[in-house]
Length: 438
Figure 1 (cartoon, rainbow, N blue to C red):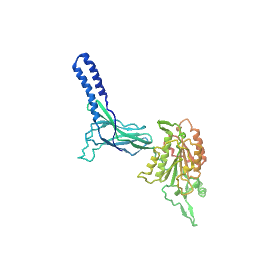
Figure 2: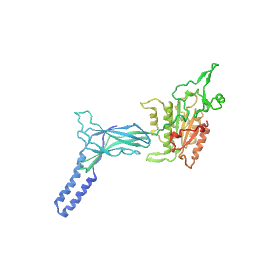
Figure 3: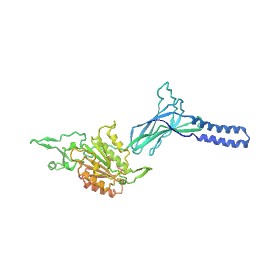
């Protein structure tokens, strides 16, 4: 982040300087016609001042460095991030006041132009380092990704304001913008304890055997956990708690194929974007962060060659949720179909069951549907969010592909819900228990 003067540009005249130059040409043309020597002197002065100003800004070689910091270090999409610039003058000559702005690559824009105060000269006999001048500004981070910010652009002018010269200080730094995350409620799904602690769920009976503790069925419970004797006694679905300690993992699947999400548009020469896909990323990462906070070890699956586990532990002094957000910061589309082996990748299971599955899907292909169906047969719970572009309340119904996908996943054992980017992820997370068909 520390950089020195890195690019000088040729000096140019300001509007005032060009005005003086035009005035000198006009006066030189009028002098012979009017026969006034004083006009010729005025023309010479009008010509000399811009030239002198160009010389003054040309010989100025400031030796500046800049350190750029971000607060917070990692921004969330749609929020503002404060950029803090620490500028120092290492030259033996003080610098006059100037104008500055910070460059930024698309889709971010450069900072507003502001005034840089005069910087005192560096006196090595008096101090070890030059005096620090701090500059601040806010930058909007509209979209997730890793964005280059910098270099710092400074424009000096001469005392007359007739000429100016621009130069760059330092290089660029990368601002990581993570997907937007929404807090999800704990009551929408029954999420067993993910802290790895086995819960005491059996007790000795009078005959010396252990009785299974049963409780009422909740959204998210696997049908394989139904305790039929207890169900018969209570006349409602009851499930065992004896397997509760095995569910300390969860798998989050994200469909990342470009053709799965409509309305892709080109943002830059090498980048495309879809609001539907961005919503899907936000939904997936919100689920992942929620599961991490519940104590789960989260496995992210978004392509055949990527299954990344994230635990609740720290790595490189970064909380797990920040590592997960960073993993999704620059996720792109266009991946191959999902495969069953990738959905179960790195999902170390204590029992024969897969961990709970959460899938955020677009218009997936048949291969992906088959893989999801196969994974659901062994999973303790499988929940799918099918993202389509039709807004809630619209006169249009969900696309046919979304309805067919929902039916196929439901038959395979998934709890499926059609959701629209018009609905916040927190609302999409609120499953209606009447929709549970497993």
